[in-house]
Length: 229
Ligand code: OAD
Image 1 (cartoon, protein in one colour):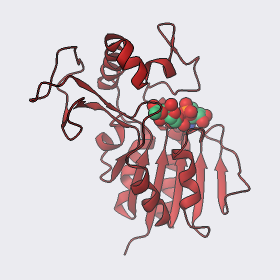
Image 2: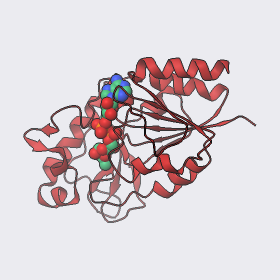
Image 3: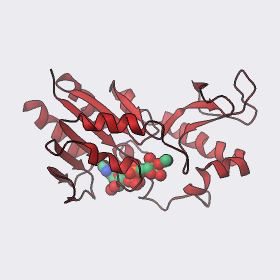
């Protein structure tokens, strides 16, 4: 049986593909704070604004490619049982070839019905418009977990984290809960690597090594090490 590697990724793993992280820039979009756009309240108050925000992000995603960090994680599957838990809504892990990817905060390319939560479909192209509806007539919304909404996949993520023999944490500020708490579910004896230019040692987490590197450099290096091991 191959060893299980659980990988927790955040916006930093996609930064070198050209997608902005949340806390590295001023957090503003057309003079709106991101927190003001990515909420159920914003959707109720100004649906067009929220649609436009995600349309632009979707359009940008179509122009991006996976970077060496995404690709190295896909290569790791040749030797390890790799499970990726991502806070990202992009599909760059999948496009790089990773097979087990659990999205905690939704998926930008998918949309779902506002009256039938089970109706989730992939959007063709990048534009979702007011008046685009599900077969039952409900307006479609981005398939995104907004601030203040529950995170449906968190218990599955916690379960996966408990099975880690090696844990990689890549490109996340570890500030947004419940995702940030996942590191505590990994077994104490599991070796843990935190790759981020701002990575720090956390005395609350055993066997944690901070690698202060960009993902595009640090991840392929670590993957090479793990493949040779
Ligand atoms: P953040 O923007 O909070 O953190 C991005 C992290 O990426 C920081 O720690 C940076 O140091 C790091 N970083 C920047 N460039 C990097 C690079 N080239 N390689 C590696 N790391 C790099 O993003 P997240 O931690 O992902 O939630 O944020 C978590 C959640 O907060 C997001 O999923 C989003 C946001 O609000 C929702 O949308 C619900």
